[in-house]
Length: 140
Image (cartoon, rainbow, N blue to C red; front, side, top):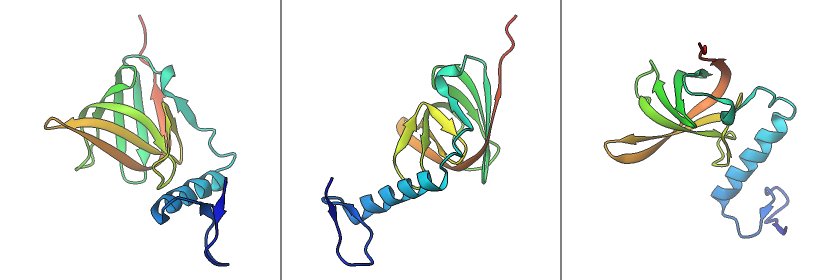
């Protein structure tokens, strides 16, 4: 990989990347370094079963997701301005980066959901996840 340096105080970034891409990359790298060894609170979405209830606590909201099938869930969020109804859980992004770890949720990451609003596909990204709670549906 080739790195370009404009001046002594400049941030290194791969040649051919824009300043905006570099900020995202720098944010992602900084996030990973600052959370080294702290990403243990992680949930693989493949472990979820229909009827399972996920409670995701972020800085500003609580999200209640009832798993329907796979990554599809029904979302309830008491905070105004948040999506509600059927959503697809995509995974977690790293800090302010657009990089995503698909099919995983982890503390410190930002939950990313896709949903439909009046026939238009939308994406909602939360603030950093503080807590992940899983309540399994009891099988008879």
